Length: 574
Image (tube, one colour):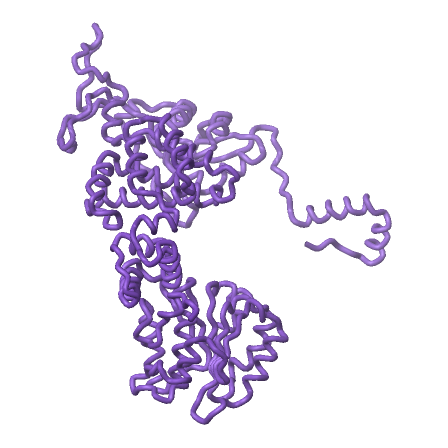
């Protein structure tokens, strides 16, 4: 008897046997039991998570003569056996849309669906796999029958890329009940692998099963297929070494060695480590994926303190010690650098992945250590770094930029030291341009202690510019402007015609300049923007003038066009 793959041999026969997809299987089971089965379903999800399996179980339940009251098929009758095995059945038709994707295939399916089931009380079920491969014309041919299908006809479309269906045939989505299948967790795959190996009479350690489950990447079918490979290599044994050899995985000790190299700053040993991996036949892409998993695990250990359960028990303490050797910020930066390499796909596309991997590891080894911001500020201020755990809220104030950072430095002779309560006046911070609106910005009261006396308008204007009170990008314009104080206590700003004149007349700019200038002038004063003497009012470029200029340019290039414009009174449109 020919060998049957584990993925086919242990395919579920009942709704309750499908792992992780209870939100789909329970809904379908209740629909069958309550006679509320829809006429069209769309199953979406990654590969190997049970889409086609649940479609077959639904077909088995609808046509099973021994179906229970709870909607579960018996799974053992002749009808269930043929449907479960994917054999030819009169009332259950499976179609591969990848090879039957044209409009003629859709028309043929539509014509066959008009025939009644082979026996009374049965259903005709059409299972269309890889449905996203159907063309737009094929979907259009199926629209009407999906909206008003014949009695006792059910369509089930399975796809891994529902976005393509939404882009090419959006009306299909409103005619189907959509179910999104979840990825199967590592623990669920491990539990299913244990049940399968127990029925096969094979023992396997948990670490070997967990490696297979992680490599399956959320697909039960992939996990069973990988286990088939391992059993074929070992002749019926499943241990961790066999799994590593089949899957090309790198031992955890290699990653511990790499972490030691990075921790100790042994840059040259990066080349030795990569060369040893190649000499032993490891795939560098697999090593990279393992490195990403290790970095993610170290960050989790560093932040939560929980052990890494996916690694061997005897190595958990070693990884915990390595995690404590790095700051969480350094690990995050390493993971970000590694993610950039995967995001653009350069590692798989490169003809020399060794170079890319060596450069990545060298960047890890030369990565600057993270420095606390408080320690950096203390170092800039000249104070020695405070020990960790020292509170910073109630300590002595740090010396300001204008004061000496040396506490015992005496003041120069002949000069009185400034009082502690009156620090050196710092420049006013730049304020963001206010958004124009009907509400006026109130002018703040002038600070007499900052002004001292009432300066003239020009001096106050220059002081405002030097203090950084100009709006963003307008410093050169304001420096070139001429400022004159009017007889009505207003401030006239004279600029030449052009963009500067238009910009200064904006209400938001005027409000900001008025409020800022008042703090330096000692009193509120309205600002009036005028043109310098002898400057003409700027010419306004209108849309009509642009059209006329464009039409004149076209007439010069095409003399024949002039006659048509003059006789037919044509004008240029947008």
